[in-house]
Length: 251
Image (cartoon, rainbow, N blue to C red):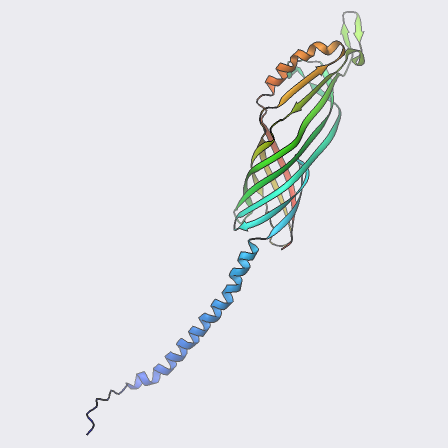
């Protein structure tokens, strides 16, 4: 006589267990395939975070070029150079607000502004709107100008021509080598496809400029107005900047 207790499995268990087991095995294999498929996608996202793009710029800073890197989602860093050198022909100019007499003057001059900059962009709203901050280096930043009277001047019965009157030569120089920058931008720094168009608007904090004024002929007495001109430009420390950028992505 066999006293061993035998436990018989219910018929329903015998019917459903093989099917449940096969379903669990299938789900396990499916999860493993999904996990293997997701690993390359994560790697691709990490790879795309380091995409970079070459930019060509044009604006109030002159013509330039930069290189932008997408280091993390929403975060970009970029470095670039700008070159601005232009001459201005004789243009009407009123010096009355600078303490000089309010006769009509003609201004001719040259603007030289070369810079290198390092900027950090934080992108929002599908990376289309960016907050921008950074610093610029200005090895050359100078404005030279010459003022002459446009018309002859009548003194009692004597009429003096502009070339007989003389001229006033002035220069404005921003001596600060570093200039903080703060602005806002529209458009992607690193395009998703191949090209992107961006617009940046901001301002540099340049500090107070240094003014030099020299005069010749009958206008030599106007050199004393250098202090007045320096005082009137004392608060002109902010330089607005508007820049258009076309970016080309490589990776």
